[in-house]
Length: 108
Image (cartoon, rainbow, N blue to C red; front, side, top):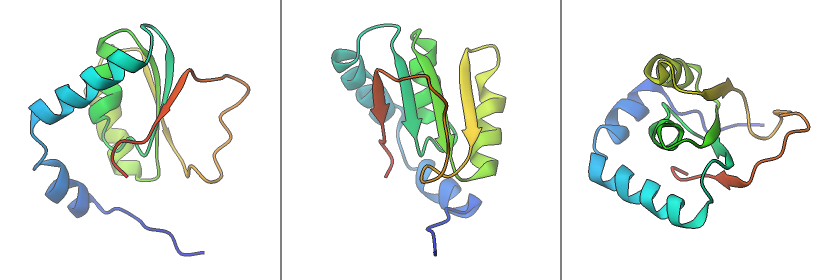
């Protein structure tokens, strides 16, 4: 099966064009619809644009992405934030018995 693999160049080209205000607006939208401190699964999280912002607000976030370099960047930016990043394919990744209160896919 062929898959759509986002390269480092793709992330560099398209993510740098996203203004911080847009991310803030999207996170504000999520805050209105997902209760505080909920567990969130961020599928196709890339370098963690939404995952990190939500973790800063106290959400329990797991980010999943196929691009290993993007996951490593997200982990590096996380610092002491409580956020879990997983390198894997959403089509085959087993996430265990834990449930999520919200599943988001904002970049795809």
